[in-house]
Image (tube, rainbow over all chains, first blue to last red):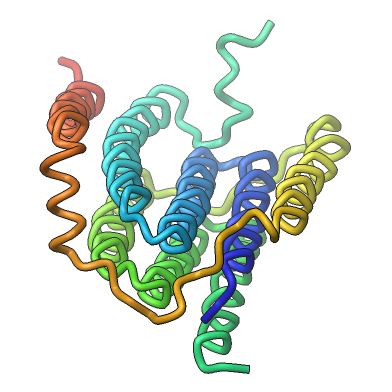
Length: 100
Length: 166
């Protein structure tokens, strides 16, 4: 069997890559995708802990995270469509209404 | 090296390389397709751990529904190549060190806590869907019902946000 630590380290690596993508990408859709990547990394850690402790509670939480991610995707993409329509651009640097 | 370990490393490599590809690619549709690969690889890992229902939900909801939504929006907005802008200095000089620091910190904490972590299950026993659903509909029934409200509100919000004003 694969040690639990391997899963957790993979989860940390994926989360870190999600942070890098979040900081470096300029396209608002790709930034949104990196959030999904980070959520997935956390889900992996949840399932790994749940299997290691032989308790299914963590897997139930993964289901909740997936539901919240789906809701977030629906609302977030609605906001993206609205922003793209108003700004005529998907570049986050063009969305600077709150910037002084 | 046992078979499970080989499968783990293949899937982990697929996930990590696709995540790197997500960052490197400049076209959003390429990033979206690499994210699909990450999600399918993670579903394989869940199956390897014995979480069969979560693996199925991962494929159906994440790999299917959410990614299709993303690709629809990319197509709808006709998103092209990411335009190159002058990188903010903060992102270059704080972003990568910060990400490396976070990953290193989590990795170090995991590496040090080996003794605290319980051993993984000796056999590849599956968490049966029956166990999971019993738990979901008994102990977690209140949050479960709340998520249905959440989804309803999210759908209404998305419709209101995306409708054309006239």
